Length: 471
Ligand code: SIN
Image (cartoon, rainbow, N blue to C red; front, side, top):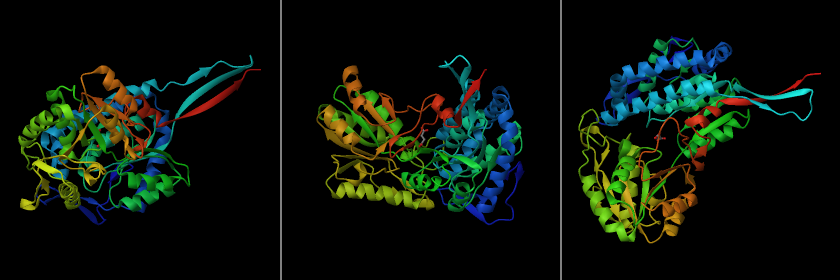
């Protein structure tokens, strides 16, 4: 852990970080709790005044150094990531670049936090809106994107003038430790960025009870998001939440099958299907159904499963046994209710790894668990639909509203369909819509607020209206 510029925690119990590809312990981090979280909050609070007083250009200087350091250390960051959570090494390299892009983009965006001058209703007043950083921010992040979820939060927070406490997931905290080292090398002043590892519940308790923390930014499950909403009520802490998804992917009759297959491959199998915006349920119109199932299944059969450190691997392990159990349950339930497995459909647990074969199931329907819950695994269930209206109705039949995908070459149909979809992100003929400069976040139970883009920095500033009397 790093608190107020010091590496601490040697005296604490440790958490083992286990490689899900082979069960080996790849490192340990201290099991911090309330005491350490409060120390980090104190450090961030003390650093806030001077950090927030720097110009946006000075803060951008630190962030740009961090951006370059991340790129210079891509290989080490990527290896750590693959070892601690399993994603294929080429995806880890991609994540490092993606993560660094948030730091670069927000370094610049911090220079564009504009206030306002509003025409007055009387001659003796000037009315202005000033922008202020929200204060100390706690960033709580998940295991599936150990670098990008941190930088998507700390980039805008730091650029806006906030100070930060990072709390990475216990499953993949080592990438955050390396990132913290790079923050040190970038020269951030003491206390501006702090890293606390350990018990999520104890650290979250301290964050919620300490009134010096003014903002929580969290990526994780809807279940935990709801707990944070309740807990934040007492001190009316600001919240940004990026929660669960259950993305529909719709292929209409007039889609280009090759484009659709490429899009589904990109969306469904990124990170072995362990992505909040992964296509989780696929609806294909009857006229193109057989052709799509055939081409898609062939492409899926080509995917290579194995230890992510192997350069040729496309699908790494799931994060743990509980993740594997969930995938098994979703497939078994679908098969028991009448769906058929076209390819895959089995877990692979040799060498203490937790893998699942890339799987296509066809003839699924809405009654199956796989069409109702987020699977978080490499399983593509395909349901036949007859019309655009049916597709929209099935797609929206969920409490979630993070991402959706539409494949059609017909602009009018695509437009009409997307207008009906209640999802914060839509990929139209595109299976990989994420980028630093666009808003990322969900409707309904998929979250509150947006990360990325100019909305991503608005989340870390408050408006202060100033009425200036001139008489
Ligand atoms: C996520 O799973 O929440 C992150 C996916 C992304 O940023 O594209």
